[in-house]
Length: 242
Image 1 (tube, rainbow, N blue to C red):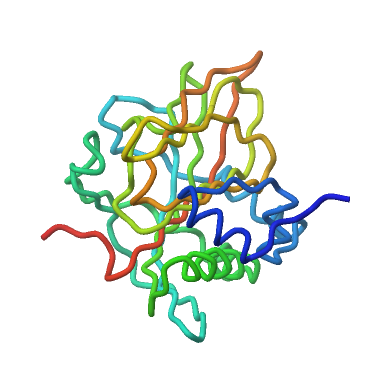
Image 2: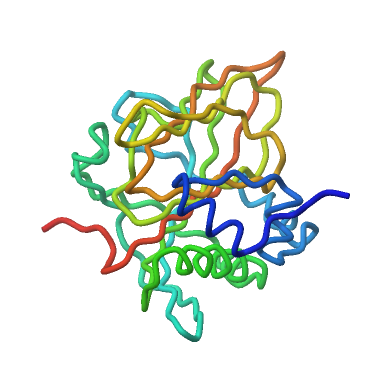
């Protein structure tokens, strides 16, 4: 019988190492989300607009972006007004300092009960590690494709995001090679490397303690894609220019 991790176990792992990787079965059980309901969201990734801000000149990334506030103790998730995604250059040397306006996540996605349940459940786990009154949450849908050869999930390289916690959720991958995820101690050389394969497997990270990156992808016999949902949780407000 498979032993599944508990809320206390996941909290302890995040405290201990600053990250935790959950397979599909572990993640859906830990956060009490239905796999079939999650899969109803997947076709949205086929309709993401191109990212026009890539400073490396690439045409391999499509994305949408929306912001939420998660309010405790009632654990209420509220969609906020649409805003630009912004990071300082200290966290993103390639795209930092830019106000990047992406199309918002589709209303049907935001309205899906499993969408709010997933974001809230992940945020509630992070709040067990670091208690807060409110999370400022940014949700990013990414599709990296190999239409022009190589696609780069993290063109900025190994990085932190300037938030409290990050969840990287694999929605799917097909016809690709590469895409190895790497997580390293922000204060040393210790780290792990693995390739996320299962849809709805998840990497959860304490952003102050680890840096992360994903290696480029290449087509395997035909054009391929790698779809992810990245959720960031920050206390004290959204990142914005001074």
